[in-house]
Image (cartoon, rainbow, N blue to C red; front, side, top):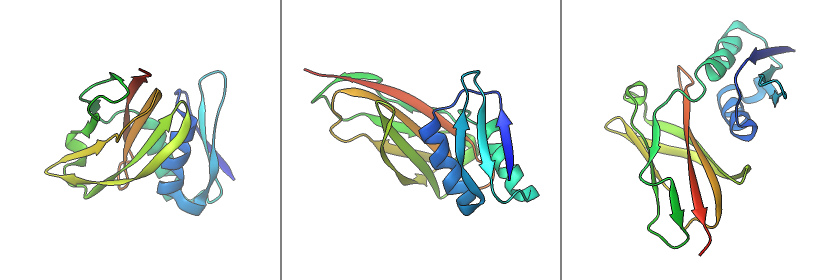
Length: 152
């Protein structure tokens, strides 16, 4: 087993999903420490897996991900999250993770069309949503945006 460590603060639940999608059974999971370090634990420490784990950590939160609104009230028009980053222009899909108050709410993939990926946050309820989008091939970069929904 080999640990790949970076001095970056990450959202541990989102990082775990990204690592498991990219590395599959080669990882036993991720961890973070109080001193701001994030770790991907590799069961298969091949150079290819080390490269992927390093990409995930080194490119964490480097994709441009935006939302048409970052604060809203329940019942407002659903927000749209967009990843419009040159690095995804050749990708067919990107992955996403939606956390609601720090807990995984949804995850999956969404298509990239003309170099842009979009995700609609449907009928959000009161809470803080952290939406991460990430590349599922090659350079495993990710980005995120936060949307706060207020109870009415």
